[in-house]
Length: 399
Image (cartoon, rainbow, N blue to C red; front, side):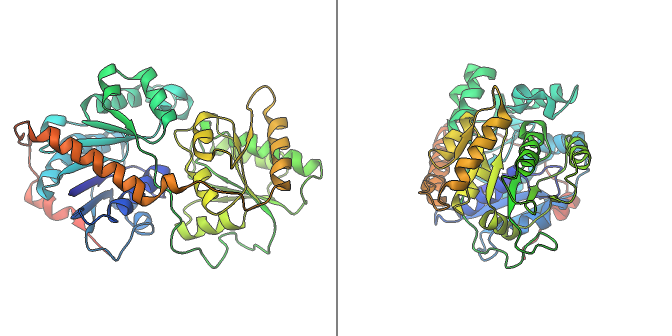
């Protein structure tokens, strides 16, 4: 099986989507019947992706594409150029790591897309107007065109049924994200000047659904009530975004500047260090497609206090401490944190369902099923091919 995974996006730093793509590649490479995995990224993603993929497997090929940073250029690349690259590499499956424009007739093989969430409908504030309308159009076009849709959770599949056509829903199934601890944990703290202080951890992009302001209000309340030591830190790891200005304004206006640490662009090993040393992970999201930080924290036996939402319940099971978002979320989170801090740090963890072997089995079963269906259809020729100059500039670099 020769697989192409495309994760070309605008983010330089690791995001949930790029981590999903890297983990998917790692899963597939555990199987001997996978002959090659082609991971396609933008040039600015190369360094971050290299930090989370295996380098000792000659079947892994990382290709970088030279495109502009604008949304229009990126979407045009997916629609016009990715089919030609897939044909050039003669792959058996094209897997989009997230929904993007998909010119189905241009492919000679089946296409699969991972669906992480339905944010363009569930929380339009993540995108703003009118950008959210464009995101909805792209999402629906991709769902219609893809041969199969892999939802990362049952929660996402249920949301899909609310917003997609019956034809799209029939093509969908649930395959969880792969979540396994990396081989290394950083020996040194990524927190500058850290001297063993206790810290609460929040791993979240600065977007509306992550509810970071609630986490900060809870932290402030715990400090004011004397329920945590005054030297305790709040560590926020995540890519900056639409909520960054509001978050930083709150930190400054509430006098938390010396207690809140902003981190982004941390390595996988540094992130694992944070999970291992944190007092607890705080995840107050209003909606999620999966909840990767919750699952990763569980791997390191880090206490987790999170919103009582379907995706977190699905991932966290009986491991996490849950807080209702209504009617008084601050009270609920403070109470849940009190309980969590009294609890043993090493609770029984059920993460085998996210293991590489299980996820690899699920995806390869899906790929083979799609190949069988596709074999009954006459192979389609791509509408265009890569010019020789572009073929040469589609770099393949391995470190």
